[in-house]
Picture 1: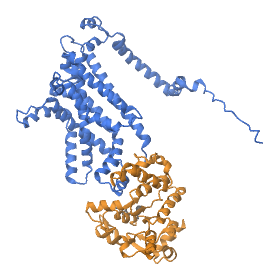
Picture 2: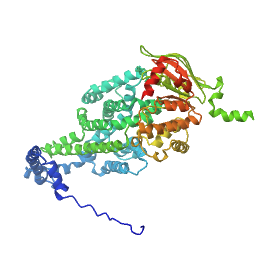
Picture 3: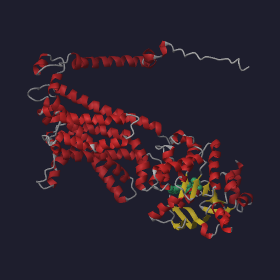
Picture 4: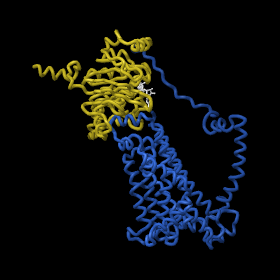
Length: 374
Length: 264
Ligand SMILES: Nc1ncnc2c1ncn2[C@@H]1O[C@H](COP(=O)(O)OP(=O)(O)O)[C@@H](O)[C@H]1O
Ligand SMILES: [Mg+2]
């Protein structure tokens, strides 16, 4: 009996028919699945055609990519003048000082390169010290970037904050606002739910004040009003003032985003934490906030993205961020008339940054969704 | 010779205790939610090693009563003494009592962002200040005891209800409590999972743990309880040994309740 064992060999699965898989299958199912779908697809294709084709013509096919000065572009008006962006790249990205001192450009370049190198391990699944590295990027790296781009601490030629500008300024203002607002926002969110009336009232008043005031007003007040309250010898740095204003403004929004997360934590979590003997701060630090922050990530990132774009409002106090730098450069005598290129380039950089933030938050959400279920 | 036998009996023989062995004492406790009088003149004494089952209709104040014991709720009148510490607004007292008293909830309340093992070690490490290694060893021992050591690395969301409740019991035990409170630990479970949790509770009872269990599992009550308490509309109506309680309930309300429960 035992010697007559029948064996079956499993044949490999046959591939599904061509019409069900791959691009063909996908297109058939999703774009031409029904009559309505087909019509919508065709209309969309037509709209894309009338919008995208001229844009590509202008921005890529007819564009002026190489040249020394304006004359190339003036000769070919049908295409974008990227020569302008190339010629003024340093200024648009790093501001007036670095635009005028190309030999110093390594400083901001190094600072950004360092950030990218530091950030890479955060995306590596098996890297163990993510939390520590993240904390360093948030709270240690700002000193590095300041030392490099300002220069005084390292004995380099000083690039005063009044000469900061372009993408670098946008980045610095937004980062300081975002990083500074996180701890303040957490405290405010906790304060808003506190059982102590003094703390609760203060938090509500603080949040509602900054949330109810437009950023442009805050910046204006920081610039014009703040000096009125201090003796004239105290010369508050303009960029510092903008940073403070932006941080306060942002912390109110961060607080509200986190409050949403806190509200979503079931009462049972607090009770279990208390029953296990955690005091308020331990309960918040180990049990409530880790969950609340995860829930709030999409909301927090939304406010980050909004702030990143809002930094352009610093032009009201005479600071030249990415957008405004691109704008004034395109109004200089040498490059007059290329506003559109300036705007397009600025928009492109903004979009890259905001899209990256949004993708990153999606990735984190997906990862957390898998782990966290009640 | 008498001394040794007394020591041996000390842990697991509740019948031996004297007045000094009373670990929970509630005297004329009253509590209101606003106008609503939720606990009415509650008197209850629990000796070391004693197992008490509390039952009663929904809304009768059972949860509120046991939540007063670890101060998840505060009472307004009367005194509650737990292990010689009086419960009042003194934060230090509350902290001390919560170290002694473990609690298991109807809906488990595991921390979903932490693995099973981390759920069990978080509080020993941060509240009891145990070294991580030691906390992990203890946690694994208790997970072993509730028969799910192999799930240690999973997240609570990946476990069944019965498994989650067993983790919740292990998590509580990791704090080495002297008293365990259970608030309807099996009533959120699918029927086929109830026995695996009750088995763990019976095992715990047999090891001499002082337990107060709010539950409608009458089989469990008969098997392990020293005494059954029946509550209705905020009052303790009747308290008796299980034999007496189930066979000769004194009050109509108790009889009615039992007939409803046992009819199922
Ligand atoms: N936080 C609260 N505020 C107001 N009323 C409450 C609160 N918690 C419970 N109650 C009420 O107190 C009564 C007793 O509740 P509870 O102790 O949970 O009963 P049981 O556990 O016996 O079902 C119920 O009527 C309930 O509605
Ligand atoms: Mg209840």
